[in-house]
Length: 286
Ligand code: AMP
Ligand code: MN
Ligand code: MN
Ligand code: MN
Image 1 (cartoon, rainbow, N blue to C red):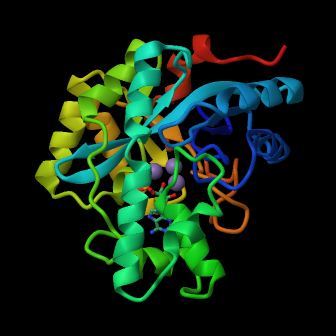
Image 2 (spheres, rainbow, N blue to C red; image 1 turned 120 degrees about the vertical axis):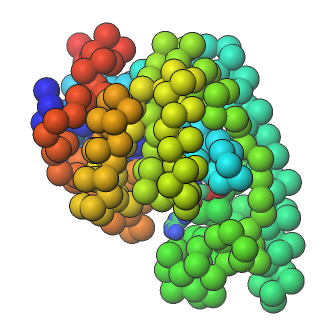
């Protein structure tokens, strides 16, 4: 149970991944994943397709989502697992969170035009498969394919991270709101990739305390953007705050992602896996 090859974080074409839910299910299965969740950004439309594909492969599946949240002026991602995708409050909350992405994308393109990169909105739009979910990743793909930058990492460094010409501050969901949407729909809320946030020690403590106070239950220890030291640090935080441990590749694309579906190491010892509390929510292959 502890060393299950669970991959509980990845993206399909319904947000900023390049593969269909079915192709992701096949890839997860082929790579030895035993429990899989699809976690598109602010979007649950791919879950029915993902579950059907998982069922036909004999792969255990959990509903998932990655909610964009604003906390202490920064964007934080909260992964929801094992909720009821038909829950109305969750659906409405996510729809509101998606709203404004197109306006933001136009403002991003204006910022890029001011530094000489014209046509970015139309360019990025060509990479978008879900019109409600235009993300920075789509701009990054266009900037790489047109030769402005050599890889997505340098696009983010030069153009799309805070303070850079294509970055537009955006107000996402509140932390408490996002945690409530997930938990009241019967799911478990998990802090995604905690090492990626640029918080002070005090802000990070506030994030974990408030997350827990709102009913959040888990934290990702293993994910593609975490190094070994990050895993050790957040294992300590999980123990300190009494949080369950999660594990997910955050896979987006065969060409861009450093770690493939199912490619993470086992959870460290001394933590409880989040899937232990989600057994009743697993959509088992029949
Ligand atoms: P958005 O939700 O539009 O702000 O886009 C956020 C997405 O951009 C993340 O989910 C990642 O897929 C991608 N992203 C953020 N930072 C980086 C980075 N440094 N390198 C590559 N992709 C990134
Ligand atoms: Mn993404
Ligand atoms: Mn994320
Ligand atoms: Mn993600």
